[in-house]
Image (cartoon, rainbow, N blue to C red; front, top):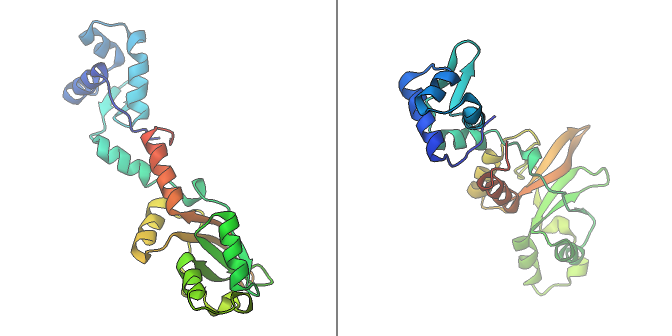
Length: 213
């Protein structure tokens, strides 16, 4: 378990003592600081949970050798897609472009996932796709979304157990706003969620607030 925190002066001093003299018991650390073991217990617990120190029975505390940035990196690399997924917004493949625009507006999303009658993913619609169609001065109620959508297998997808940082890299590299979270079913794949740039931003905010353990 890794928690990225701002250490106070006493915690920094404890860390330095363990770096120089570890492994060292809690009693010996307390003696060096002229404090009781009970007084130090919360600080030692924080340093251990945060990953700065490790403890072994009958041996004592020792320094892990990891910097704050290393601990934060480890923490980021443990976050799974499933922890920050959102509910997907889907449209049927026989829907019109007009219907898709209405869905996007009403649901306040930037990406729609197109499914067939079996609820299998067959396409993706972005704001750009719909805007491009709207600028064509055509009857949007008569144009099916299948004409303008990005089709399988040209859709980038992810699964719930994928790492969030890897999906964030895909969002950047592909220059897209969202990825469908899918699971394999008979004869296709089913959309079970979505990951967006907003989801990634929420994870960063939680990191800053120390709400991710």
